[in-house]
Length: 405
Ligand SMILES: [Zn+2]
Image 1: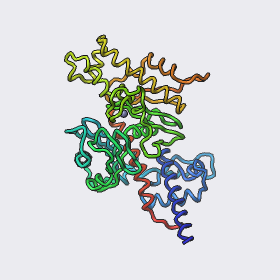
Image 2 (image 1 turned 90 degrees about the horizontal axis):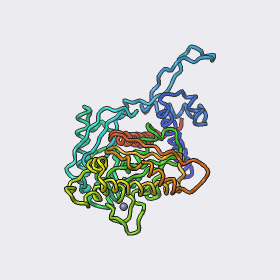
Image 3 (image 1 turned 45 degrees about the vertical axis):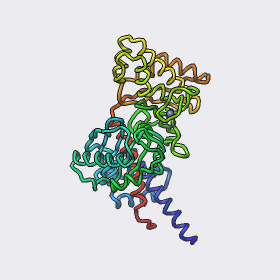
Image 4 (image 1 turned 120 degrees about the vertical axis):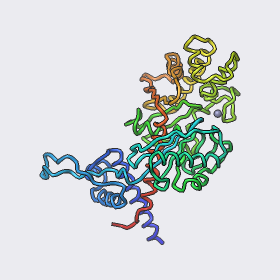
């Protein structure tokens, strides 16, 4: 029994090393064994064992690098390790109010095809949601000329309170029911591993890997969409909270018994800042505003409409107060304001920055950088791809033989 326990610990250690090595190769693109050992502060023998396992599983392959210079082996090409891009196919999803963005990529994250699958309803029953995901994946596979059975893993970004570890939806504006164990429903429809995640966390992941968060250890990403989301990266890792429903910046309270939020509570930040809140506020004045869109609101403001200007200004002031609270809590290196749809310039105007400065506890050091990244929907799906690659890597490594070599 003791022996079994010891062997399971050593299997676990072996898997941790394999994953660290694989992640390091992914980060670097192409790297030699000796450089991996140096970077991970582990022995070359350990790296050789881990890379042999990854090679035999087909997750990485060897390529020739530039010849070594200044060494006794001068002139001989260096052998580098690279991810085996063609070994696995991954699908990343982002569910919006009107459509589902799907991206199919290889194991290196290289895009093969992307589609937008239109939604009939923004808010679905869990079963309809799972079937919609299946239909969207079928369409994407057809566009990529691949079979559904070629997909090694799917990750789905959903707005709301998501327990990613358990594929469980506490609440989402895309779903008509609360407390949904979505994982089993999706598995029935898709027949491959599925990983769901809060959409703002996927943006934080995309910013960390490809965007403005590259190289940063501690940063926050605020997403402005239908609602307001937050991704927290601390010490280089995504922080989700104990129940998987932390980082709900949009539902922090900014007004006692204030405006009604889509989560059912009152006084939440996104009930003043989210798109739906702006449309609601703009519609109160009447005057043909029943069907006002967010783009109309910005147009009205640009042409000097006082009501439109005051709706956007109030949103900016509430947002500024919220951001100063985040800085007071986290003191991050950088805050990235990220969105894909419409203009959100009213959230980083001079008066909003002044509001932030006024709300941050005074120290004689500059404020964290506040950057804006406006991108299209495929960037959300890229975050989903990155998450799926990580999760599928972990699964594949767990499936590897446990031999002690
Ligand atoms: Zn709320």
